[in-house]
Length: 500
Ligand SMILES: Cc1cc2nc3c(=O)[nH]c(=O)nc-3n(C[C@H](O)[C@H](O)[C@H](O)COP(=O)(O)OP(=O)(O)OC[C@H]3O[C@@H](n4cnc5c(N)ncnc54)[C@H](O)[C@@H]3O)c2cc1C
Image (cartoon, rainbow, N blue to C red; front, side, top):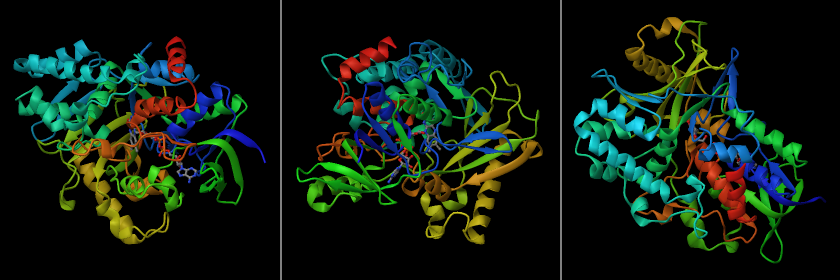
């Protein structure tokens, strides 16, 4: 039986990046993905020729020399990526539909302060304080700046972890409207005002303020390119390869994984990109301390979404070079809403395939949705769900369209086709628990208990992916370098990234 240096379980972004790093560093690697397509939550699909994404709609850090730019350059995927920069003076537009007021987030820190200060002229100092506080946090996470000092890669400063976004914004400004605007993009991190630690807000907002890009033809191109590169270097990637069991040796290390079809794959080291709870379910109780196992298995996951994918009539709708976050009411912390009030908000973006395309090919709209809203159909299977579920989906789609019409009254005339997904669809396609968007919830009340280290209690098993690190393309990339850095010298690796 072939013996690999590394078997990577799961070909999501985290697994593929870890595999490509280790391939580049000369290791013999195999990636085992249970689905047909690689990419995990970041898959693309086509409707009437228009490519839509299940996850990852825009990323930061891709200006020349910025963090993600350098990471992707090292990974040999940068040059082939098809991306388009969002509008410099507005990458995110925040709109309150009742008042009709909109605000703009601009790229570049100085520009961000200047543009937002136009709407809040009396709060210029507060906005400056906000960006300075964000940059202070980022400085504590050296892998985000590609600076490593004294071998320190990650901060565990209690203040960043234990302060909620709500508290942080209260410290920054007394202006309630400004607080709402600064928190309005909380869907990109499934933020909760009282419990999400503010370092998450800081690291994510920092990357978008630095620079914001959209993928032409979908973000799934990242996974495709990584797979190509791993294979080019002589390593293996296998789809339809669900791992169902870890086999242990007498030294209490994993010696192989077993696939659903009974095949065994042997390796020296195993990196799991699965949800950590799923990995632990494959390890017998006597091999791990009960407290460790229970803590991880009981961790709650972030909420899910309802999404609609609209194919537009050609030439009917402007291609908008920013995202729109719209709120029905003057409140942005709206995730726990009553079912009959859904939806209270949406994030909308247009799809395009070519740089500079004047008209959009499609529209993606997403809105947070609690799993409870679809729980009654939990046991049903994809494509065999009952009429009541299909009716529910149509009703929610109609409600979302009505909200969109507040902003674009003639939208319906421009629609060629529309399809929607619920948390159940997400659960089916992405295999995340209850269709969770970004994995495990971090809490300021129990900061260290809601973090999972990549190194596990099993000597040759490491975790990678959004449940371990910060979610998102940048967060998962940084985390994959941390995980690979347990096996190759991280300081030297980051030096290569800087020099790529
Ligand atoms: C709707 C949505 C919008 C998003 N928008 C953005 C955005 O705009 N910008 C941004 O940066 N990020 C965004 N993200 C987040 C980003 O896409 C994710 O954080 C990232 O892709 C997660 O990658 P991962 O490797 O951690 O996990 P996953 O993608 O979940 O990968 C895990 C992989 O493991 C596989 N697997 C599981 N069990 C097994 C098994 N037993 N055997 C073999 N394989 C297995 C799964 O099939 C999957 O491929 C978004 C996510 C979603 C869902």
